[in-house]
Amino acid sequence: MKAITTTLELKNSNPDWFKSYAIGSIAKISGAYTTNGLPKYFNSLTYNSGRRTDAYHKLSNAIHEADGFYDIVTPSFDQATEKLGALYFDVDKFTYPIVVKTQEEQDAYTQQQEDNDNASTFFGQRKSDGEIYLDRFNAYVYRQAVNNEITKAQAIAGLEFFYDALHPLKMGYFELSVNKLTALSGNAQLTTLKNKLITELQNYLDNE
Image (cartoon, rainbow, N blue to C red; front, side, top):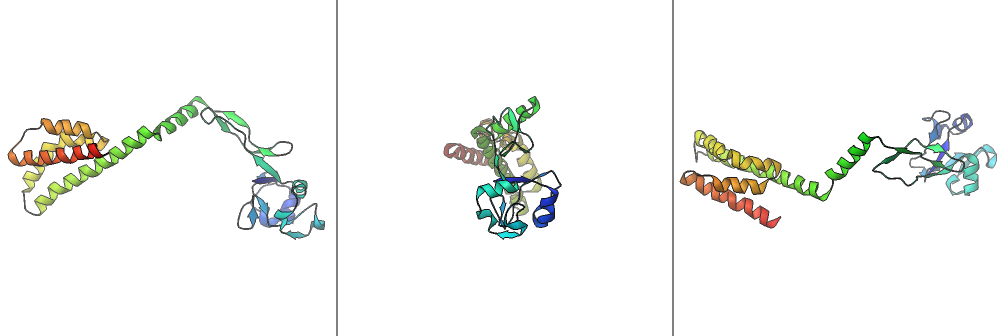
């Protein structure tokens, strides 16, 4: 990728390419009629007597550099403790200064890496699956009430009975929910449902 420093002469000769850049600013030209930061047509200040040159991007690098187009070189840096500053011209290339991150920025980077590691991905999936299962359970109980299989009061009582045991699913704690369900004691109907829940949650754990 190449860049060029905007001058008054360049803006006047090539308004299509430099209209959005202020004089003295570094232009990174892009669009359908460019290749690697080079325009495919250009009014060069050093070539072809200033007339439009088609296929300008195919000319020699010496001509591009004579007009001011130089490579953008990105230095190596430690993303944990460093960042890149503003693009500037350095003798024969455009490049970036390396700036030391503040402690706050370093901490934010570390946290971002941890948020995207395998453990976070695993528990993120667990949490998502747990929330889905809990929503489906709530819908299942209310569906029975809507279909007149149980009363609304029974539905509320059932949700209350299982609330503490199933609430850990919102955080993805399937094992904790299984333990809490196992410890529950209720009537025959609730016990049947309890055993069904335990089986489903254990199947999830066995197959993850």
